[in-house]
Length: 382
Image (cartoon, rainbow, N blue to C red):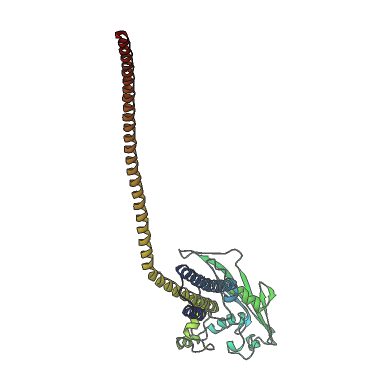
């Protein structure tokens, strides 16, 4: 756009060299034409930037947040606890054994060697869908109890009883109605297994979705820390060097659940970067406009001064006309008064003249009568 403007300006300069000097009106028309072209370029740039902003905002609005971060948690200030665990023919436990009820803040299993810590932890891993190697076994059928007194058992089963609770600020809690459910996994002699939810056959996906809605992430398994993993965690690097590694930062993000926001954050950061570029462009244009505005400030001040002086001049001229009109009115009044006085004097002289004419007429009559009388006397003397 700037190159095109420079070419236009170059053409204008060449044409000015060839043409004779322009009159003032022609120069003004040319300036107006340049301003119109510049305004058109600015409008095109604004349309492009606004269209780009609209596209970015449309992409942000189209982001499926639940899809980006996984299924949405229903966090209503509640949490689930393990109330009890039942084991049937599972490892060291022949028959049915019940572990529980557990305290609502139960969060660790401790004890001396041989006390059954591994059995309990592996029962949880078993229900949560872990493979045999994760439980230090070659195949799942090794979980079925086998002792000298009890042999040839066909299956083993573990059930975990969950309850949903809500705590208050006074460390009290109450159970949520309808928040109880049971998850069961059963393994058979051929190492196959089945999942059950509330006594009905289910699948690992259904189990995973159910626990995910309750805030337990089976995919990353950061809620269940085994004995040997504590030392591994302490030896982790602060941050992974490549995407295939897991550092302490990534581990903590998995635990607190912020890792699933990374893709969404990356997309939003890209949108922010794009908007930042647009903002930089607009800020740059604003600065240019401010500089141009500052340059035009003197011209504006001169125009304002000229306008004010023109206004004052018009006011003074108008006052001058008013004063002249006032003086003319006074002079006219004087002339009218003089005319009236002259007319009065003229009327007076005219009356005096008429009076003299009458006196002269009387005198002429008397002279005439005197002559007649004189003639009469002369005739009588003869």
